[in-house]
Image 1 (cartoon, rainbow, N blue to C red):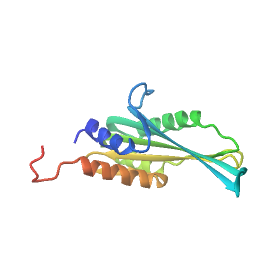
Image 2 (cartoon, one colour):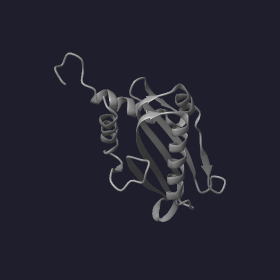
Image 3 (cartoon, rainbow, N blue to C red):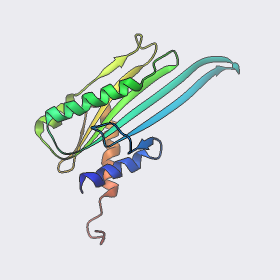
Length: 174
């Protein structure tokens, strides 16, 4: 499977719940997705509102032929900066998570190790106005997917999307 096909398979899995854009996306990303959820809590009647809760997720997708540690860290910093620029922290804000999914033909051992260790976190007003976590998934088409601790769920989703798009052996699909 080529990196373009792999990226399209992962994007298909995100289209169900996220708003996915492939055009007008800033460099170095190939696509981006956004998810916004708003919830409200009431006490007996709507007039007695207890809380507004906003959760957001910004996902950036990059497609690379080969990724080394330096390139991965550049992509991670670009995604973190672009995601933080979109955060509107305030009294009703709960969380705004930022995810980077890199689809690469090959990676080196240092890049895989950096993917596992990459951790970023930001709290707003001592978490009273919410927080942001950074999730990182590195999909090496030759060896598999790797992630940081926060990106484990996104890694499993990417692996499932890649498995579903791979033709089975002996089915006659080409």
